[in-house]
Length: 208
Image (cartoon, rainbow, N blue to C red; front, side, top):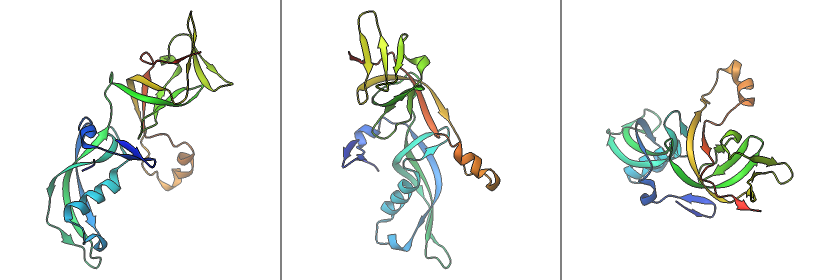
């Protein structure tokens, strides 16, 4: 179970926050090495699952946060010559995958000609492309920020400003290991496995 605050730069999850996130059920083989035999079996299984899945993207499912609960376990079988205990498990993972139309609060973490990038404590691949910004927005090359020109004011989308945004679409890129002959070209063109496009109509940019 995971228990979101930030302590020394690390994200600490709390159950009351995570219960709002969707969950997905997964079956897998857990391998417990001899060095973990001193732990309770449940703790060893949870550590293995979180090490394997946390902060990883599963295509069409979302960004894995942590194990939510353990549903089923088989009896452990000791591997011949290794001492590793193999356990078949079924468990639920908490994942981050906001739905279309969901409104979320984040912070602006950067901007370029391709749009504004927004970050959460645990995910930074949130993009507001230029065509989803307010009408009248222009990119300021000197300050590297987007500016919204209204009839009355210039409004600035400053870095680190908190913003509300609405999810419009998501993009998935499968970064599975390529065949050896394709590795060099694919590594140079590697894309973010999961990103979200959002609309800026709920932003509150700073006044000039």
